Image 1 (cartoon, rainbow, N blue to C red):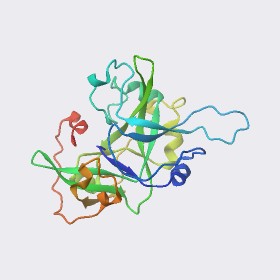
Image 2 (cartoon, helix red, strand yellow):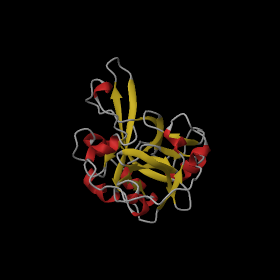
Image 3 (cartoon, rainbow, N blue to C red):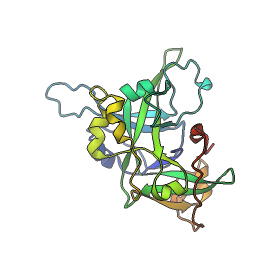
Image 4 (cartoon, rainbow, N blue to C red):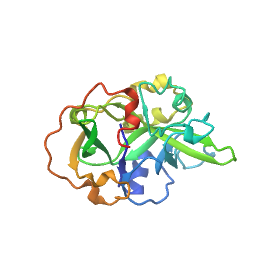
Length: 251
């Protein structure tokens, strides 16, 4: 799953990776939590003849997906993740999988090892060697009865691999740079055409660093939340957790 993540790269680094020609400035963020705004990139936007702009745009989106059919957001659970194996068929996410696939830039995410039914040791998970990755995301604009609109989104998850599988059985879907265009092409590619992109990460793609429980509190937003601590090796995560449990693992 992905219930907290981090984006500490500069706007210029994000723009370079994702092929953006227009991006607003933003500060490093060390502890991004559900319901907070996150950066999402979409593609396929028409450009004027002779324009040097790309067809990609970035948006600030509420992290917590609200399906278009929801009449009251309080009636919908906090959907910050969507299972990639089910999203194309699930009514909540089906339209977004077909029409509004996105990329979510990140420099890492946080995961908690379960210990006897409670949230235990926290880990900072980052690409080996550092850098930025792009999670697969879904976006939906929810129309409030009074007429206002809210852009909302979720991050797609898949099976965890390597050392991550010893901490939790789910992890974010990572889209490779060479696949950005195909993933974002919602006009030319249907969900079945991009299903192969929602594969688990390579076992050696990420490293997990044990950190303190400071990250548990959303008010702690400084770089110290990523400071390493010593801990015992993690025990294997239970593979038979209920499918819907990933939405509530941390909260």
